[in-house]
Image 1 (cartoon, rainbow, N blue to C red):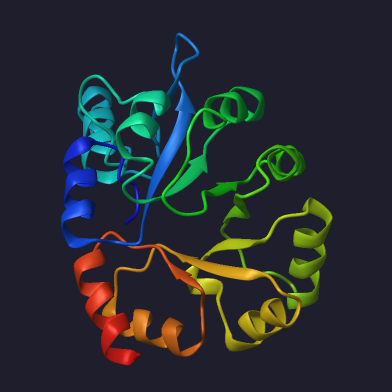
Image 2: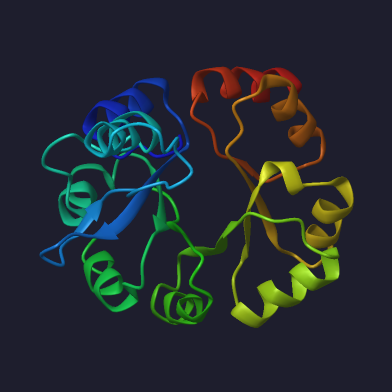
Length: 218
């Protein structure tokens, strides 16, 4: 489940037994690590600022209205119950590694980050975690260029906008032993296409529907 940044969404994910929940991790004003996506400046700009910020946080980014969960609270409550994917929104490798070292997880921890230079730190310190080069939101010139970038970062795979995924891309990444995660897939027909392309992970806001499709296709 995508952006499960509050207890209501986490409870929903647990009830339908999704294999993993994805949460966003950022730093608040007091430097605590919290579950929070933060602003999305693609949202319509003609809405007054306070209203826009509220809509972005609650509807689009699915952030809690009040009292965001700290990462420590989240890990203490849920790390033993469900697979966890942490999408990292800022440079926090030192604090994150220190926090995560206190907890055992039900499944291998997944971390994605667009901060290329932090991936090696995660790989060196979190030996059992799967690390994705994240937030890839463009069409790569060639699959080779993407593989070279993943290899240089020492990531285990790539988390990429589903619109840029092709059979050639998936096949080439798999040939080089890298995972492919597709985000954010909220269309049933596209989900079926991606399953047939052998994408490894589908990130979605509608897990109930996508899980039925996966079970039906397989």
